[in-house]
Image: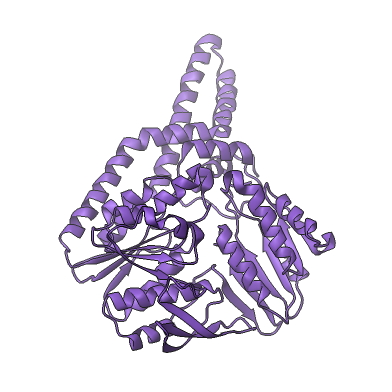
Length: 487
């Protein structure tokens, strides 16, 4: 089946789409994955209008060149059978080399694509200019952006008419679409998750939706392979401060080392406050009377502001990071004039974000699965392992393929993951790839026995066999999941 022409073309396009149409990364990925679709692909290409146009241009190129070559051969051999056989062979070779034609199709489409993007972005900018009372909250960071966005939205939505970016709409075009389709003259607050891969990305997003409130959720080596240096990664996150409005209010993570080490370079005249999940003294907020539910129902604590008890807060979210997010929600809410009592009620309405330490409990088997498959950074991994350690009366099963795009730090990061896991997990399930051997080494070097480590060729097989590897009463943490463009 994998040798069928349409399967090959759609597979090449799927990898191109996963690489966000980055030609250099696409070539690297298709060479690493192979020219023919592997059997363990779990998803398919999204056939958007742009996708269909690119595929159409690819086929058009392949057909036209094949026809020209066929006609040339026909004039030489004057034989219809030779013409047909040659055409079939050539078109199949071109299909196998579809990645080349897809890149050319993208380049051919670039002027139109660029014009459409620029036009849409300019329309979005113009729309925001005629909404002078709209408050914009920008959120960026190496990790925790989506959870922070959802938390802040929950705090503000009862009091204001709020629009937020949805899903992966954290690019210039995605944000522009949200502005054009959802923001109107009744919108009071627009919460914008700002994605970034390279230096200048956040600046470009701030030029579309300039923040009144800027939040940096945290900084680590996520996407270091693209950034090349940590200095680039750090400065890109702080673009949300540099290119915010002059009087913008800034929220920073007091638990994040790279933020603490670098904020003085970027915070000048801005009013700023700190949020914390670990009672860092930089924050005016702290917690006491912390309790964690052993059945995965969540956690509760008393929230203090300058030592004053604001009351007990109970949330069905497992990660301790939610404490910092709740504090950030309180800070933003108070800044916008919401009373403490309303903010406390909003905190009780927070729900787990899908695939981010999301608890799934099976009562009949008493198995708790924690779905953290959208987590792809080292701080998230540490949080997951820390969470697993809280379960005292359950066997702890850990499943991971490791992290991607960690550049030169790949070995050290995954050795540390193995070392941390060795103190917590009872069973570790690893997916074979370029980084999990380092996790294995980190486990074994720290006394974890090999018979408690299970290997699988791909994530699909892990999910299919999961019931064979768990028993009644287990807690299972599924941490991260590689998309099909990584090996």
